[in-house]
Length: 275
Image 1 (cartoon, rainbow, N blue to C red):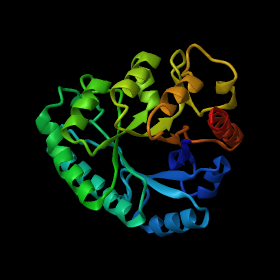
Image 2: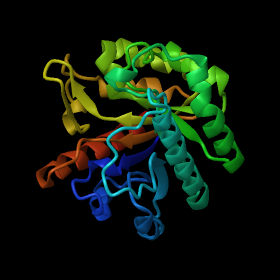
Image 3: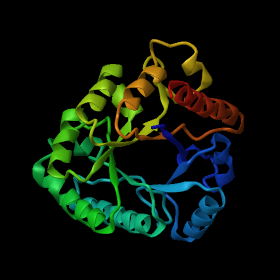
Image 4: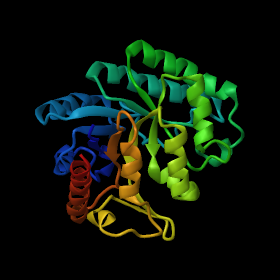
């Protein structure tokens, strides 16, 4: 089977310029942080362009102030309740638009929330979220985080998936790479292979600590300080079924889109050549 390639709306400097995303010929677009008023436009755009919808919590998001914290494990219980509310709203919308998945961050990544994650904290968020998602027949893909001191490795997420086996993983390769390089990515794939549903793809230089889009040059020569993209794709290709690949470049300037387009084409070319 071939990879399904998509892109995140997070690549847009103007978050409403959906047409810009079509340069990558996506089969799915993962939408993040849009108000209720924009949902009809998202549905219409995707129907007209034969693109499937995926959602990244929170959608819809109707607060006037941008979302600054998403805290499924607190430390403030009110923040956990708000994270549950936002996630359930996203799941409810996903059911309405037949979205491919809903991505949710876990755990809270902030410095004041880095204590050991107890089973009670896992349950306080996912007991309600997973039950609601199951009732709506929606896939919830948990995105791995980097900055939590005690919950960021593959074994930590395995603990979560063993408690809630209908949940899936959105493997953010950059987040994994920032922990201990490619060995961490490979460990995530090995340990959590049966749970990987989607992958956030972005390049990261561990020397300069700079993120960038996947580019054509990633397939021509390997920078020892960056993720080996062909090697990564080969590992993901062994999964059954292959995960959905979501390009997640930083918000792109006008001059960046040509490189993003070439990077997407290089992934598709790799995909064709391996078949």
